[in-house]
Length: 275
Figure 1 (tube, rainbow, N blue to C red):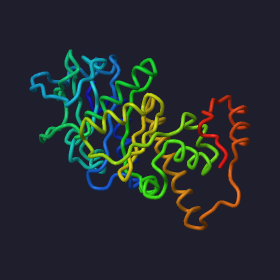
Figure 2 (cartoon, one colour; figure 1 turned 45 degrees about the vertical axis):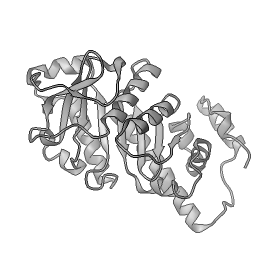
Figure 3 (cartoon, one colour; figure 1 turned 60 degrees about the vertical axis):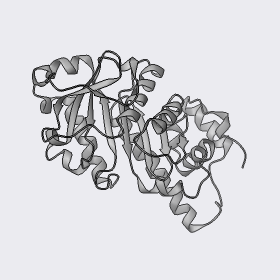
């Protein structure tokens, strides 16, 4: 099978295009990665090349050794992925130590995988371990309302989680574990990758202050839907805050406990504090 005909590649391209249409990817902002299933690798193997040089990842991910990943390219625009996928995305292989990678397909005009590859691979490794291999997608975008909230809310997991949960009833259903928050760090390096991967042991969402969101999920629809839900709740919260400094009514801790009982959820008590 040709790479571009594979269902997992088509799904990847759709997320890139949908994200661009949501205005979450100004210029070359944001990145996406997918841990490819062995049978998917086998289905496109005839189009993969293994003659490119190994390059350092910038971190060590031993639990991803020998695996293949579909990732966006650094400096590439999400809006161009659907127009010319082979020039804007690539399939990479990680070596047997989990320290280096090589490009096996894509980026036909040259280039490298996303500059935030260390963050993606470290988070994919964490999610592989904590979900017994179920999670395969990491998505990073720059949704405006969520970023705006990082200027006015305390950069604390419990505050962001509670405020987003209160903004829309579906939120605790979609991300019942809550969200984590990373204080501002230089993007693309190992330091922010480590901080994010620590949060990903507990959450599926990490908000980077003044920068954007990292989400992880089992598949493309789940992960994109998670990003969409967080940003819609942030949009509602921004509107509420612009109308009044206080809320006249909201969802209460008791309401959340009732919701959890009906939906058979476990909501951490740390987020159900009395204000």
